[in-house]
Image 1: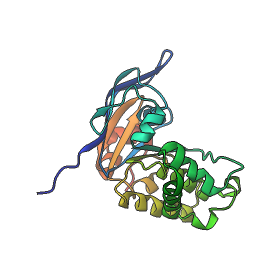
Image 2 (image 1 turned 90 degrees about the vertical axis):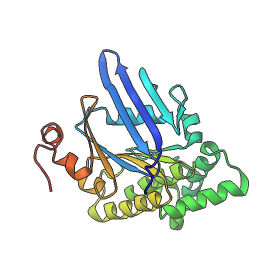
Image 3 (image 1 turned 45 degrees about the horizontal axis):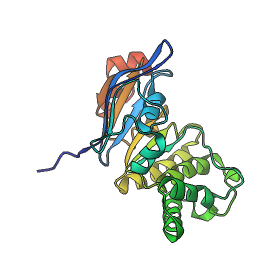
Length: 245
């Protein structure tokens, strides 16, 4: 009998407000070990705010966040990184004036707190996983958009994550570049790393995930099998505007 994967991250009844505006309104969200969850929804739905609460960049006003069964609700982003949550942002933010390798080395040393040869080995492995070995000695700011996005992923991988959070990492890519990125993400999943991916490029997203969540107005509108969620009338009305195959 196949065992059900254990919950890696659980957000329970999470709420987040900015002044009078409720951005996340009692969200329950689970990511299982090795799983891949996509999040879609209209602008302002609370998607990125949810990732910020999971990563520790923002603290929830109510509810709880657990990582591997341990309550990390009050833990900051640095501690959650050390516990296994990595993050790649929508807009790549390389450390300028540093090489690609040095950027990833920061993840290995500051994020995973490795040193010496171990940090070098982890950095090299992360670069290889993201197809960046050939540009390791180039200045990070000289990279094109696809490689900048892959550098975001490599730097996160160097922190040894159990969960990788991706925020619209497919935005702005050509179809050929998107295919390369999908291969990279598949390689990350093959390492047993769980993924949560916010994306508006839906045809990319559904190729990489097991479960889809649609958010609207700070709440989970629908979740489950991607095809089922994308054909849900509520999702069509709130986000898609038309049914897709």
